[in-house]
Image 1 (cartoon, rainbow, N blue to C red):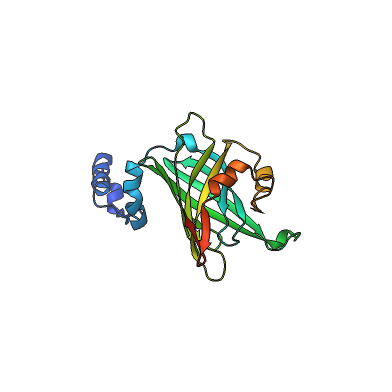
Image 2: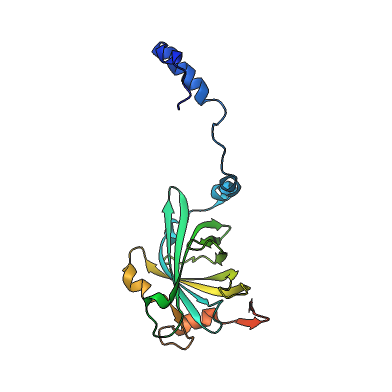
Amino acid sequence: FFGVEEYELGLPADQFARLIGARTDGPAQSVQDPLLELLQPLREHATSLARYCGYYFEYANCMSVPGQILLSLVHLREERGNFLFERQERQERAAGGSAEDWVRCRYLGAAFYLQDRLFLIDYESLTGNEMSQTILIPSFKSRISRLNGLKTGVSSGDRRTPACTRVVWDYLGSEINRVAAYRQVMLYSPDDPRIDADIRERLSGAHIRDGLFEIE
């Protein structure tokens, strides 16, 4: 299992150490993951996202239900020098339905801060059938409140139409009541009083043509 011959176990300790050391310094025994190699330059050139870590409400024009605003819960964290995030979505199939009538999505992804822009790439972990990308403009204030940007992905409808929408991240804090926050994750009409005027204004400017969201 360790690649050691039986006779080598009987060698003097210093000779055995030199032998094993020579093997350790030789060619790597395992092949590096090509995807990790591809992203390595991004890690080397990226700036720290530590000040942005925490929980956010993400507001976006819903790609699958035009005219509605989708509120999601995002958690951005640092793990072994990498910045990862999780985004929770859910949509009710029919008004007043039971818990089984909710469609839930869980996106997992990585974030990079490159040249004054936040780049976030994720995939839907429950089905593994879609990816999305978000680009946010950073906050240059001492206190993070709301971040504006664009998100591209596909509609969850049968046609899986590629789409793009404006998006707003609303910072909640480094520690929150996750249950209370998750209860707010759903679709909202634009005139819902729980969607404030600032959010509506930041999301405006997107319209639909030929089934696609376009940004003015």
